[in-house]
Length: 392
Image (cartoon, rainbow, N blue to C red; front, side, top):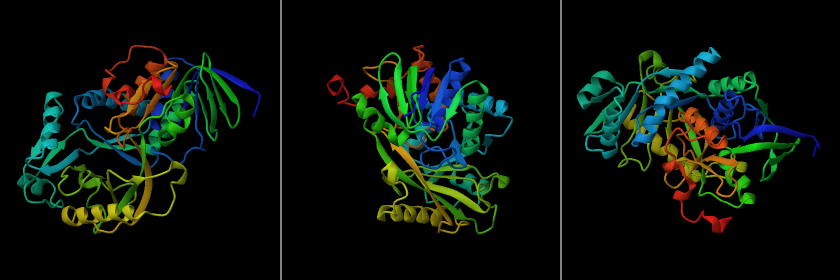
């Protein structure tokens, strides 16, 4: 272990999208910030890699729709600073039965927040998107501002911005020990650090760092199949044909949502995925496929056969991504209950990428002891029983 001690205002552990945005906001506050990442960048071992993610305002919960307003602004600001396109508006088409309660709730949320959207009857859907086949009774809800985020590009832009603002990005440095206190001490495989505050955003590795600090969060790591399906006619589900992102909400067909993005990442292939996966150890991410992996792909094949007839119902490419889920699907944004200069962001449950600009702002505010910009009640760790002082 190197004897050198590096002093700074804040250390962020984990250079996924949440950690990058946290470091970006701290650097904008003129804080001396160091972003530590255990793997060499770029890498595909966590939850933030890959070329694309969906961005949307369509949520069941008001608080997400409200947060997304500022997210869109910050994404636009980063795009302007980076002088590169990070987002493309395609619209988001939600499909569900006419009486689907989720569809109705999302429509009410969008109306309340004056987000532009359009209800589409089965007939209107057939006219607008002739290569989408509907089940009897299915209707659509189109959110105009939905679209695609270019994920890899966004991570690179953020890491460049952090350095430009005076922050440091140290990759290939695994954290071996955290000693709480003022300052907090962090030992990595390369050196030791001291900082006024520490922010932990390490996805599936969260509890490995938190256990020695006396808490364990109710987090479950899932390995998700990211599938790309060949178009029978290349481009037929592409952005050039104004095909939107989509979300299948009919839980009578599948226990979890199915989502897709227009073809573009891989020419002639459309990304369609199941919003669920199988228990995984983040250290063993590339283990052989489980039987349930094959079942998930079969669920997607059936959906494609029934709804997207111009795709081949067999994936051409299968990649993997990790979700870190909480029991209620909402993330944890909080301070450590005993050490208030240690801040935790975890459990983004597969929908954190689009929200990262505001999540990073909140984690930055918590670390600087500022009043958070949003009500954090839905994100406090105290909502889960058994995490009280008895565990410390």
